[in-house]
Image (cartoon, rainbow, N blue to C red; front, side):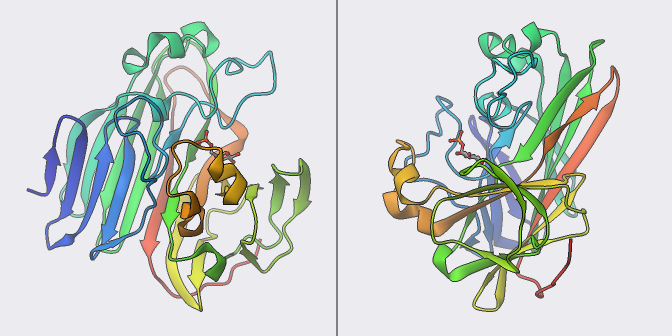
Length: 300
Ligand code: BG6
């Protein structure tokens, strides 16, 4: 069976190759595993809570309607917890939509969100439908989101795919194509232009790269070989994050404690500005993670 549903998960298996598959936890519609020819491409903490009690530490949690915590007391999303409620709500499997490539969809509406949480967003005034399309290709995984304003109130939101990539050793990889991009460094609270031709990792890293043309692909490169390429549609920003030693120690659901060496978050999103949706309007964004590829050097 290419698509299998259990009470808590959806498992999608490539029809021509059983060792290429993915698992989606219905809680948060979080893709928690993507195996390409038997090789796991996503990092998942050994202590991740998969029982719906908190967002998953690993895989691809979904950030909506706010990235981080709003600092503006007057903003409608000010009271929401960090990264909003999509990653912390029970999504529903809508079904399989295409066979080649294999795609499944999951949906979320306000009625599925914990009412206490939902009313923290603009006093529960915003009606929406989220549809996540997850496609398992021969050498790629894509996650596409459609946000529809199904109410009469105009609203604004952030979207972000909080992708945890699994890598052999973060100190051996570089990521290309951020050169000359505008960047906000969350650790020092400063804006600057990224000047490194390749970014590398030797300490805690938490930067928001902004307004990058969608033709630009980010590639995780290890000793001259591309491990994973990250492609984007309508997602102009990307957060790059590694918690390193101290921050991982402070996260109870981050195990093993040296797991920061095996992961790197590259998180395509729309977070530097909000998307505004009038009643009846829709917005779409997509990320594609591709296994391998040729090195492509692009400028910003
Ligand atoms: C990243 C942020 O996107 O998410 C970091 O840039 C944050 O600042 C990280 O620490 C993890 O957030 P959380 O809420 O999943 O612990």
